[in-house]
Amino acid sequence: MSIFPFGKNLCPACSHMKRLFSSESSSTRPSRSVLLTSPIYNPSPQSTTAPQTWIPMKQRRKSMAALDLKPKEKEGNNPWSQMIRSPKRMCIVTRQTLPSAFLINLRATYFPCPQGENENIQLLPNAVATPSSNKKGKGMYVLCQKETIDRLVTGKGPHLSTLRQIPHLQIPPNLTSIIHGQLLYRILYELRHIYRRLEALPLCGNRKDAGKVKSVLQWLSKEEIEDVRSGRAVTDKDVVAFFDVAGLTTSASPTIIQDIPVPSSLANISPDVPLLPLKIDDDHPGDRNTSNILPLYKLASLFPSELHPFIGCSLQAIILTERQRFPPNSHLLDQRTPSEVLALRTFETDEHNTVQGNLGTLLAVSLWRLVCFHGQAWKA
Picture 1 (cartoon, rainbow, N blue to C red):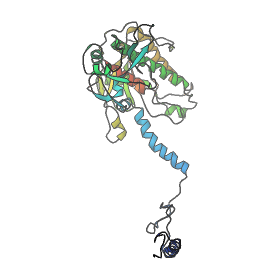
Picture 2: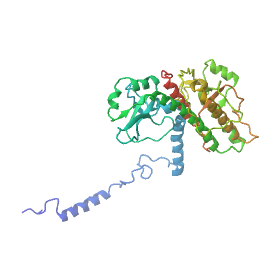
Picture 3: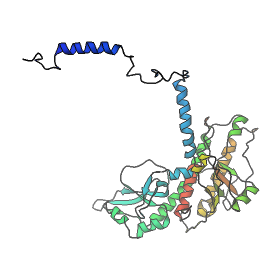
Picture 4: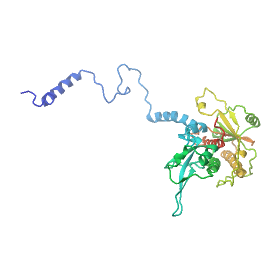
């Protein structure tokens, strides 16, 4: 009979003696914590250097947040980098995968109909006229180009199999004009949005704050206008677009209308938008995220004549609101006499919430989408 009736490893006395002798032998070895393996609390023998200065957690979080947020904020204010960093989607007509900022989102919209009739489901654009949250359901994307949208309405292609997946789905015959009108409406919406945000900003009470403030819209001098129209390279990194306001009607007391006007008809407009080169400095890595071209928008040729008064008054109201934010005795460095060309600028946001440099970002994006709709700027 074995002296281990319960097995060699199951004897209580033997297991107790094994633990006793193992603990005595382990006491001769230098103990090292298993839990505190950090070199700060349990340093290794070879790392006997000068003690590290302890930094409070609050200061470390502030420094880390400043390093993380500052470059992201600079990239986010640039309209071109914002467009190319948008989520990629595939066009149902051309099967091209592009950033969603260069596409139009289409959603199946249900319209109630009388009893006894088939369901009325129309394929309409989503989040084009105004920014809106993502809706649940199946969405489609089409290239923001007039010819591609016409192929979706009238032509045949691979998109038909995608459209058949939704029963009773109808495509409006005037879908191209609907998208065109909403793209125009979005630009007017962004102009009114800039005006309202500038009104909500706090006033600058002293000259110190006034010297740091940059204008979202700035008039160009005669020399700068000649350089722009001659196609010379632009060196100001804050400028993202130029507005030629020749032909727009203005008023002595500009006011922003609460209701954005809708034109009765959309003329067949084929605008020509010159693209100016931008001088990029290779020593600044932040400039690589910007586009190397700047568009010059002739606003009178982009919009129907019915919208010219609203655009002219909106631009005047934005410039006047920026000037009224300063006391009468202060001197605004960027204040200039009116001319025929305006510069749209984006820059870093002020930490004191006196300036918001991203106000012109969405306006520049909406204008670029309108130019893409007319078939331009795709090669750029």
